[in-house]
Image (cartoon, rainbow, N blue to C red; front, top):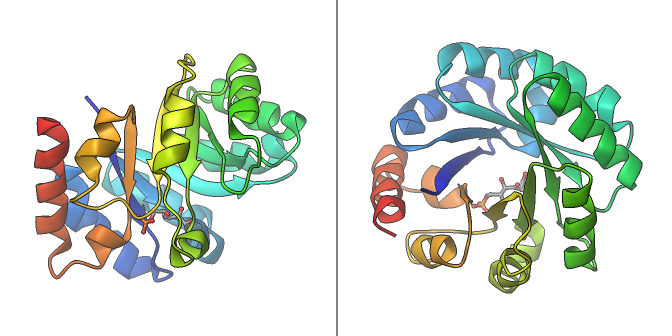
Length: 211
Ligand SMILES: O=C([C@H](O)CO)[C@H](O)[C@H](O)COP(=O)(O)O
């Protein structure tokens, strides 16, 4: 069964906590988005984990250097997954993987902006990465890009890792994304931009469970 990850991309601490409360019944993973974690830091990780101990917390650090050093405090604060850029040195990715393993947690390699995504995914997987993230970022989405071709490539490799997909996924694309091999579907704007985020999350849950 695929997991749903809700991307919390507001900068506001209280709004983030309130949105998490609304969507939590319908999602598996609460993601603290990159702008949000830079703005709010460890305090938000601790608060979100305390409020939702039954949910996985993904901290979207997009680490680029000093992997073990940067990721460790976020795992210790309650993060279950942190992200590290596939564009970083393999030593950086290995550092995050090491920190994750030391904390019974997971490291996600984010392929955003990576030229040879298959090569990085294969090398990261062989070095113990837990999750490979296919990701069309907000700026690339604004330029018309989607993650679906990259998903085919990465899912087709048959690596022994979970595949996560992010980039404008909504109710029209979530089922085909799961059917194409996503283990984790990330949804941000389609939930937080909806008139009722809870209703949107509920609808997406039903679509994923029926896929
Ligand atoms: O990771 C994200 C982005 O890079 C900002 O941190 C988004 O949370 C991710 O793309 C999911 O959001 P949507 O694309 O709006 O579904």
